Structures are given as C-alpha cells and as structure tokens.
Image (cartoon, rainbow, N blue to C red; front, top):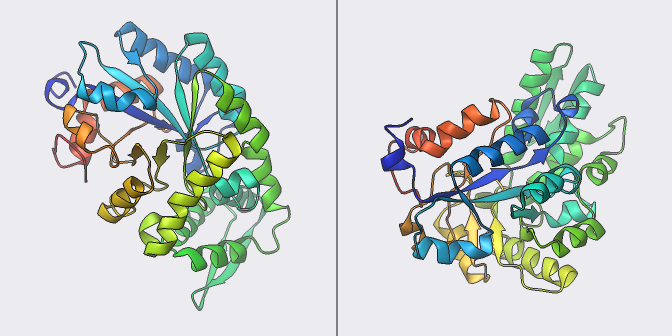
Length: 329
C-alpha cells in the first residue's frame, strides 16, 4: 500500500456510502455491502483526522481541485436517501463537525417506487419458493437455504439492472406480485420522506444532491428518458427545497452504466458535479472532468479501516482500473 500511495493516492477523494445501521440490523444477503455501523463511520473519520485530512463539501470541490493544498481532502456522499442517514449518520458527522451529501431518488422520497434490493431480500426470506414471468420466460427459484436465497438475489438483481424503463417497472411488478407484505410500505420505512429531507437540507453540514427519478441504469434509457431523469430530478428537488441543486450521483455508476452521453447530459442539465462509482482517487486533472468524477466505495463486506487503508492508498483502484492513474471514463 505504501508503494502505491505516491502515484495513485491523489490529492483527495469522494467516498460513497449508503446506510449506517447497528450491527444487529445489518442484512443477511448482498445488501450487507451497503451497510456500515455508526462505530465504523466514527472510526473512519477519526482515522482521517489523525492523518490531517481536510473535510469538504461537494460545493467546495471544484475550487479545491484547482487550488491544491498541502493536505489531502475528503468529501462524503450517501446514495439513495435512507432514513438512517438522518437518524444514525448525522449524529456522527455532527460530533466531528464534518460535512456530507445525501443524494435523493425522487420516487423513493415520494414513496411511489419499490427499493427493490432491500424489499427483495425480505421477500426471499419470507418465501420457500418464488416464480415469475419475464421477457416470455418463467423464472423459478427454490429458497430453502441461505445459498439458494443468495443465488436468487444475485440473479434477479442482474435482471432488474439490465432492464430498460418499461421492462424495469414490469419486472419489479412481476417479482413482487403476491408478496406477503406491502412492498411500498418497506420503501416508506427505509427512505427519508420530504419533511425529513427538508430537515437534512436545513442542516449546515448537509448538502442535498440528486440521484435521479427511478434509480435505473442510465445506459438503458433513451436520450429523452435520460434527459427527463436528470433534469426533472433536479427541478423537483429545487421545487421542494427552494434553492438550486448542484450535484448529481448516477445510479449504478459503473463503466457499463454511464459514459460520454450521460456525462454530457449531466453538464447540459446544469449540474456542477456528477459522480460515478468508478473506484479511484482524485487528481488536479479532475478539475476538467467535473461530470465524471470517481468515488471510493466504502464496503460493509470488509473491516472498515482495513478497507479504507487499501482504497485510500490507491492500491484497490489501480487494480480495478488496470493501473490507470487518473480515472475519468
């Protein structure tokens, strides 16, 4: 790790998180990767403080990329808009006086779309078998063991992520038809409502950003659908909050999910920055690539500080990006 840091460590980083939950409430399937505990978050911030990081908001990022300081910086971002960002994350950030951004998915905040990856986990543990039709094919899953549930979760998740917009809604409706609970009630339980988003927005440490309307893979959208997804989410957030919304986080921001078309659309829609899930540190050159910024993933699948040390050094991103130093594509 020490050998990688001088070349791949960069001048700072944006970290992507999702949920902050107690250990007893963490998921049993792949969603586990999206979750760390309040103690984990506290340890991450303390680790950075010990190394004299500057903690900045996304509003400060463009200038910071242009005017390099002597100290590395970090900006924290949360995707999707989970309620625990308010209940569990905010107190940790308040204790350390560290800013962060929460990226809101409009239809989740409205309570009109299913947060399918979490509701799917609940469905798989509520059933011993599952069957549905998609694209003319019957998909059937036995769900008697944890391994079977995990395999079904992975298969169904891939199907959903690979859908265009009409298929996306149809497939989710098919998967959850006849569920022994109200899937939208699970959304309302997990996700910040508009009153809570406004509370977050009024807090001096919090910036609200956009995460789209439907939380769908951007590359699967038509040009018009993509423009509406990015422009309308910005407009609706601004109508609710009463001020400009400057920052966008692409849902599913990997190389197959977003590219040149999506980057240009984000710029044209008036966002100041747009972030992906390409795993890499930031360099001064990213001042000229503000709508394709990489982030470092904080994964709940690893011990928090062990993972942090590896991603901060640039070692993980160097391997992920075939030893490319400055990641913008």
